[in-house]
Length: 247
Length: 247
Image 1 (cartoon, rainbow over the protein chains, first blue to last red):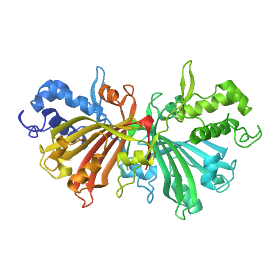
Image 2 (image 1 turned 90 degrees about the vertical axis):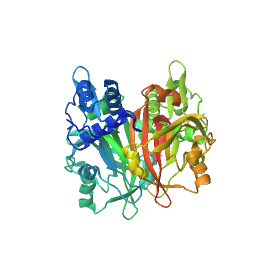
Image 3 (image 1 turned 45 degrees about the vertical axis):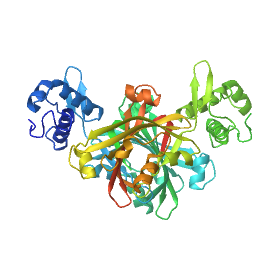
Image 4 (image 1 turned 30 degrees about the vertical axis):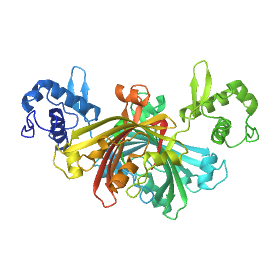
């Protein structure tokens, strides 16, 4: 049971439900309430915090909204797995998905969905500095954190410079690291890197194990290497409920 | 009618539907197809581009997905208003919404929804370096671009230092500029600034003129001033279909 000392009486400046929210968040962040576990019901929480059920209900509703808890009809209220935090620093630092996972104490994974050779459209050709129609190789992978699908990643390279990607073993490893080992090139900064909201199409939803129409981040990044040469176009669809950008 | 010279024949490296997409995008970006206008129907486009209707249909579907066009049942296909582009630079540059609009050639607007004096919770108190329960003033405004609601903005200041905000005229102007003129302080960088996806509650949906459940960016930013003193907490809900972050 969580301690009740944090709760001041009804005259305090902080609303009671806010105090209950803070206590439950602390229980989750400290690991007292673990991811996937059911928390005590309204009656039990009201009793242990010495507050009314309406107060507990309001706190729980707020925590559901904030993504900490999920209510399951007839089963109770459960602690969500923590969202993945990925720090994107502009222009001078590029964090790979694998590194982002490790920083968050999660195990990165990757599954290759397709490798396609496609002709450069006008935007792609202009970025890479090649004629329209030049062969590009697009590697499509589902990226997972602790086994949970988090993003559908499309990384696009000039085929001629990176033909080895058509057969390389790209499951469960960083493609940035793999390409670096082959070519010595590292994605150093992005310009531009845009972030929009998209909704999951049926195919994307299936690959990411989310409902059709689920809101996703759509990130398009144009990566340059350390010599400021155009290098990679990344087009990622990222599950909104599993991701926080720290920009 | 758009020019057809851009279209190469069926043997070209670029798929025909991609060429049609590029042409229609150019027509939109150049203003030949204006925001809100109906574009020619499938038959007309197929004829003027000398391609099949299936090709035109695929191009239009892709442009709808990308947010350039909207289909209205029984009425035709219409050009969407351009998305607002806002450049957020991390740590050393903070762009106000008003400036972001002007850079995009759009007229910024603001409507005050509420001003509330609220007690600092533990996160807020820690950031501002004040005791929990200290009075904060939260100014809630709907921000518009060319009259269209784009974000619901909550800017939170320490009340004691910024009591003038409770009566200040804050419609249709930058709150950053207003506060600068009163205090000499400018938001200089954010740490942290997080970006998540949220869905519009009924109240938020009403204020932003979007359907309930519409996906929104939820941005939480902790602003410091030029002397690295904690200054403002911003909590913005931003309409996904009206916004692009350039990070």
